[in-house]
Image (cartoon, rainbow, N blue to C red; front, side, top):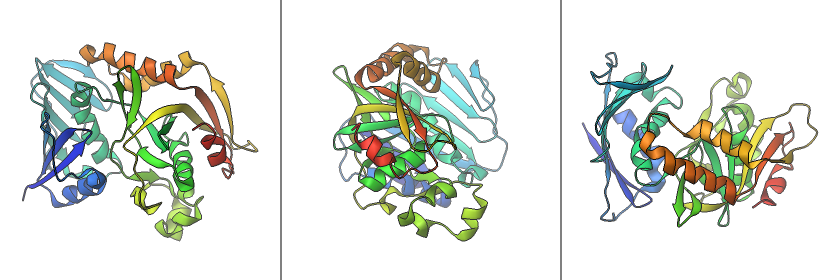
Length: 318
């Protein structure tokens, strides 16, 4: 049975058609805060998603980019993105339609399902002026604190500490940057909070999410809705107040921040965000990232084992 789900992502209607019940539930959990009873008369993204147990087959199109995890094929306005072993997405850049075929095992693999959905939509979002960055973003009033870095750097632990203190979530993994005039604004993107058990164990109010075995094992992240932290958890946007690049220091006595040169911050953003194959969007994308680092100071954030003082430290920046 094919299920239709409709959401509104910042005036972009998103229509999903999903032919697997478990995948439909997972999608609904992720996107539930973006349901809308009425939709604007603006171009929509139509996303049809099917599942298979057969091998994923690459298209007979010119390959424009290939890496260890993802390859892109393109001819004119037809783009095909292949996640090796996981899924294939046929994307019409002109009409805004996506036909996706995922390996059924992706539904149960941590992060794979959500990452493929986002990455398949990213070329269409860019062409509508929304540029995803790999970050955790939380709003203090109308000011956004943006935590950037690789997996395991401490973004989620830092972000959850802000939410526990009363900040509201903009995005757990991929806030969308868009210019209003020439001012960068961080916009929300849906998702569950995902954290390792030892990170969740730092917050007593979240202890109900864990079993003793999970704390001891700690090998897989646990996903949970942000309203497990407080009942009105989402902020749809925020103006950048600070860009923070965390790293964990097991010998640090307390959490600390130190200024980071704007050029270093821009270089790290470009490395994480720009895709060389999408040449026609690179000038606009570069301008957005440049305006982001010009609009907010950047900092190195040292995370000590004891993060009790972390929310106070970060709230001062907001």
